[in-house]
Amino acid sequence: MMKEENQERNVKKRKAWKYGFGIAMIALGAIFNTSGAGAGDFLGFGTVGNWLVYVGLVSLAIVTLQSITSKKRVVDERMLHVAAKANRVTFLAVVLLAFIVIIIDGISAIAVPHHMFMSYLICYMMIVYTASYRILLRYN
Image (cartoon, rainbow, N blue to C red; front, side):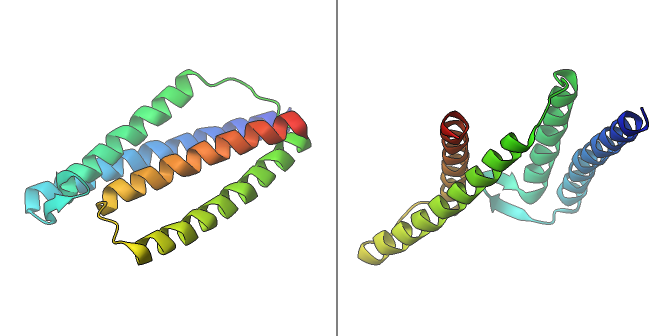
């Protein structure tokens, strides 16, 4: 009984921190926009302030959706072991991709903007992690 109350308190505390982060990003973005700091193109946004507001709104939306659709999940040691292995596979895949990018960049210059490259890298990491997790879960 005491353990459940402690877990519930930790969940509420984590949710408060996540909401606080989103609100802080929105406030910081508003401050940057009103003071004119960070003007110029930044990762596809007009200013750094606009980007911070976007990040804050997305984080608030994610936390809200997580709290609406939250359900109790039982996580056993096997799932934690598979997740650790999937993390290891993802790390190795990113290192391999970095090596390939270095080789390709040495042969001919890559003309992809930084924000697009990072978007593709994050998508690559998510796909590799999800695929490796599901494969390892099936065959482990």
